[in-house]
Length: 258
Length: 105
Image (cartoon, helix red, strand yellow):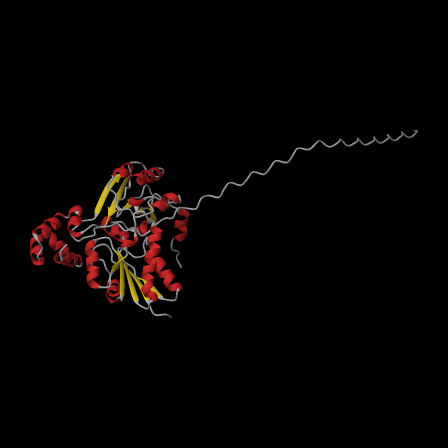
């Protein structure tokens, strides 16, 4: 097996507070560190931990398709791996949740015979479960918002529905400023087929600094296009109604006496 | 963004009990960290806009892209209608069978 290794880790959402010990060890020991992190404080912290740190954020462009940016990031990550170095890529949140470049870098590294591993991190959904008191044991559906609209995803309104990147519906680049209104209007049009227009939905953003509180904005579905939604926002649509019980199945699942 | 401000926020983020203690007595934490009056004011406000102005801009990095689906296949061409041909000549009617003669009683 050729030398050179890729570790992909997540830094969570609260500067150093949600970076796991595994991730911290990978970040510190890497011979070359790449990062994709949204807030400048965590960037400064990462750069202090490992002087080889290099941001991949400059691969994005306002007029550049994000898929092209992702492929460029993957090649930049793999170049030092091919050179025999132990490389670490640190993404904010969980590195594998709604994250194409991390998974693709690992796929390619393994195809080329290098060791590559992803370590779990704290995702925005994990922060949402904690901040909003949601237990996914009652069911939980998650989709990327543009995918949800383009592919007519079938979903159960009686379970929580989480839509990611809801501030960037239909946007395939990474512009400096996002305008969410048009995409949100389309989303409301589709959701209104299954939920009442006065159904309360929640625009959520995890706190990114310890001196900030999470953003929890409750609005009626019909009012969503006018709400403050950013590129960091995740939409939670709480359940509407209850799922029907299959009494025959309840009977079949009941414990039998010996 | 000063190194003191970065270190202050990093330290606070790693200890949830310290985070709660900070909200009860922010001034002693600011004093210990050596933050400037401007930094204290901005951090005390918790306002994301002022924090970004002090610390630098947050950039929402989008890690997932749903590619545009491929265009639908073109509609199948309709089959060409068969050309009309002249009607075939009618077949001659078969000759009727002669009726059998009735037998003498």
